[in-house]
Length: 129
Image (cartoon, rainbow, N blue to C red; front, side, top):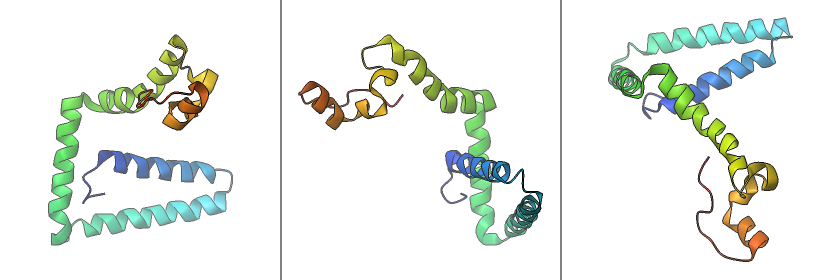
C-alpha cells in the first residue's frame, strides 16, 4: 500500500477486512482469533513504520492522503461522490435511455454484445457508469 500510494488500494483492503469480520460474526471463536490476528498485524505495521526503509513511503502516503482529501472535499467528496456516485448515477440514469442496464444487463456495454444485438460495429458504446 505504501509503495503504490493508492488510496483506493487502502480502501479496498480495509473494506475486505470489514467483510471478513462480518462473515465471522456468528462464530465467536473464529471471530476472536481473527481479531487477535488483526491486532497482531496492526502492531507489526506500527512497529515496521519505524524502520528507515518504510518511513519515507509512509510519510509520502500520508501526505498524499491528506492533500487529496482536502482537494476532493474530505470523506464526502471521496467516498460518496467518487466511489458511490458513479454506481448510483449509473443505475439512476440507466432508465433514461434505450441502453438500460435493467433491459440488457451489464454485458450490453461490451462491443461484442452490441455487435451481436445490433449487427453493427461500434466502439465505446456506453461509459463506465
